[in-house]
Amino acid sequence: MTHHRSIHDNGSSATASVHAGEIRDKPLHALVDPIFQTSSYTFQNMAEVVAFQEAHNKGHVEGSYEYGRYGNPTIAAAEARLAAMEHAETAILVASGMAALAYTFLQYLPGGSHVIITDDSYRRTRQLVEDHLKKFNVSCTVVPLGDFEALEAAIRPETRILFSETPSNPYLRVLDVERFAEIARRRGLISVLDCTFATPINLTPIDYGIDVVIHSATKYLGGHNDLLAGVISGSHEVVDYIRAYVGILGGISDPNTAYLLLRGLKTLSLRVKQQNQTAQKVSEFLANHPLVEQVFYPGLEIHPGHEIAKKQMGGYGGVLSLTIKGGRQESFRFIDALKIPFISASLGGAESLVLHVAAQAYSDLNAEQCLKAGIPQNLVRLALGIEDADDLIADLDQALRAMHG
Ligand SMILES: Cc1ncc(COP(=O)(O)O)c(C=O)c1O
Picture 1 (tube, rainbow, N blue to C red):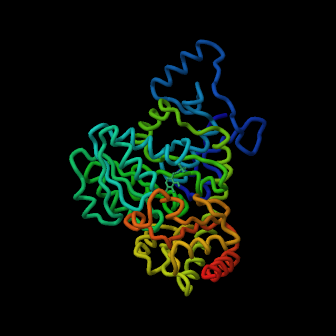
Picture 2 (cartoon, rainbow, N blue to C red):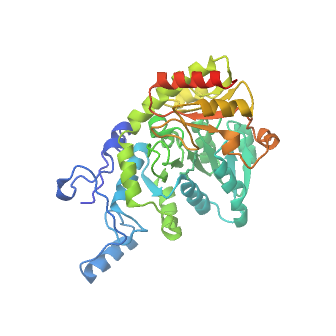
Picture 3 (tube, rainbow, N blue to C red):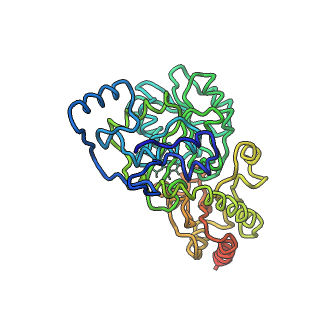
């Protein structure tokens, strides 16, 4: 009943996204995995209780359940699928991308330790690492993404984690993943990479030696802007240590979310391939547009991360940023004139979304402070959905023309 299929452990992420982790012999021979909506599990008699506890104490936990905070078959199916897609031994599904990051940092950063993070990472992640972990006497150094000399120089005896994102947000910088992983290995550190923008269709960092891969599954993995979840993938040795902590802190996922995720994952490969193509076409259009100042997209040859991305990625992703010729007011008029993308802070779903980075993600900073943080008032992030690329281009064109009145 609870055997999770793992034939795709080393196969293509596209096949794994449809089949891996599914329960083969489902109740009543149903085709689709059921939602096990239960908070607890029962035992027929005390002999079963004792056998379960003995097996559990020896570390044999797969396929048997006691209480919902420690496991659920629908969640386990999603975790097995995500692990197979990531080429990882195991994965943990938790309440959100931030929860995935928080569990990993909290478990591997004891009081007095130090973490190195690259710049241009998701703002909340930087706030977690730079501000909140201070309460636990954890210190942090921020180094520019791609500056490996600065990265090595920042390592101290108490450093435990090297953290980065690729592609990064909002400038879509690309990390040389193999080089990053090699430094962590050589210096005895844990490498943690947030690959939300890449997805396992475009990048499988475990193959390059990364220890822990994190995703906000809220984005591409869910793919329909209707769930929040986070995933932590890696080896049993590294990830099971975090799993025990999740059971104590309690910010788990839930069976309905896991079901929606399993459903969304089946089309991940189709969606991401389409989004790669659309983003490439749209970025080329915008790069040649007279009302656009600059386009940031790794698929463009002029992008500084293009060569590394070409080497390590199967596609360049569905997010791009642009600066328009104008300031805050012109960018607002451009965004307001768009008819297809919604104004929204997320990304990765079927619907295209547009974000004025300064006004939404950095609204607590004034224009000068934003500029200091590398965020000008004419910076707009565009997360492409699965609409027709030519329709999106026509919409962007009319909105750019409308922005000067
Ligand atoms: C790169 C990246 N990491 C992590 C997160 C946090 O994920 P969640 O919103 O699922 O907590 C986000 C969300 O915007 C993100 O863009």
